[in-house]
Length: 302
Image 1 (spheres, helix red, strand yellow):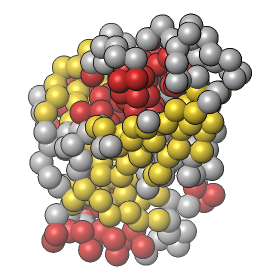
Image 2 (cartoon, one colour):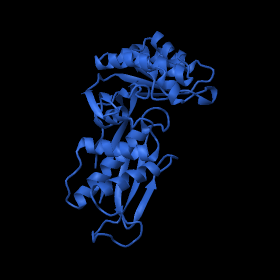
Image 3 (cartoon, one colour):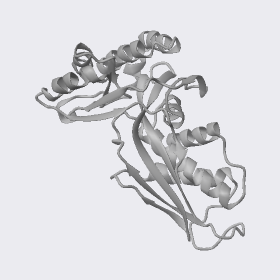
Image 4 (cartoon, one colour):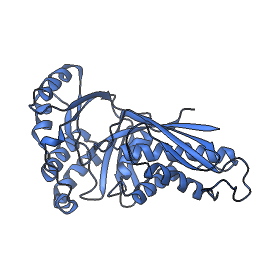
């Protein structure tokens, strides 16, 4: 028996590190996680060269949630017939460690697929959406892949569309579909850039980031995204010119996603090619990815 879950990444509207409140929206780059029953242990087979710790912690925590003793060896604990281990494999077109919520997408996909697999096998009540999200966040914190828990990223990945959140209390303030815009994502050659991920430095921006969050709370998402991008680019040592060049070429909004290194531009057919031309003109040009807003979110696909 197996389950396959699909989970998209997300892009930042307001980064929550400075204030504890944030906003993000789903993007149509995703991770597929397949989880199936095996004889014993946890086997992880990611398609990308990534640390498998998060995947394995997610699976273990789902076992714990359902009160099923996970068996590292071949003997069956609790007398549970037919399940003593899982194998997790992934397929992804979502770049890891790039500010596009790959960890949230991975933890959401693995947690949902494992939950569906175990609840079906043992005829237990499935976890609800927020239980899935919170367990995935707890697993991400345990794995050390997030600073704030990334509730904004996790909810945007899970539900699709845009979310505005209180990350400290894990409360969704706004959850709605987003206009189906096309997106350009620019991933610079980071060898030519200097990034400083000093949390204290980012928190110095709190009064200004509060302004961006207020705009997001008023559903002025594009203004919030622009302002957040300028603020965090400066704090992290990334080049603000990349986002400003996109705006000058007609982007609806543009800014740094997460703590970098990706920049996201919300575009239309008229501005898309002009923005690509500018980004491609840089001496140390990076990678440009074309995609679109994702309003579908995380789901079981098989």
